[in-house]
Length: 167
Image (tube, rainbow, N blue to C red):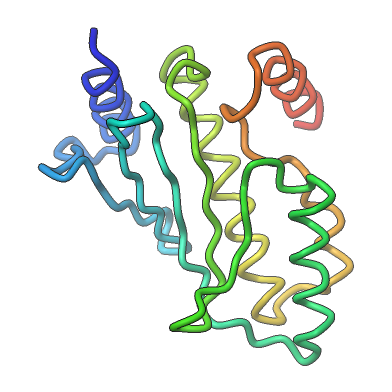
């Protein structure tokens, strides 16, 4: 199976799992999913490097202390709290964006992809709530699960096991 076919299969299985039987990558190898009315996730397959790129626009930050929020966001990126999930501000819109690149060779099946995506969505909801003032900034220090599927397989398995032990 080609990498593109594998990416398409993962998205189709995701659609079935979510009850969205028509969910597919479009001609540009992209799709968008809304999770429980809480968060939109864009997924794009990149043929050049055989990756899936996840992104979520978390909206305009509404923090009472923007400098403290930005400091936390930068620290989360630097300290690896979000692992390969990157938190950034869109210069043109001012929106907080979370994104992650997943290497297909690190995704060993649909269940793994589903766990990666669930983790991504959970982190996006957490950071959106924090950046909108709906949760204390101190809570950002508890959001360190990161994005699986982005590191070497041995590191990935250890992180996956750690996440399962937290549940």
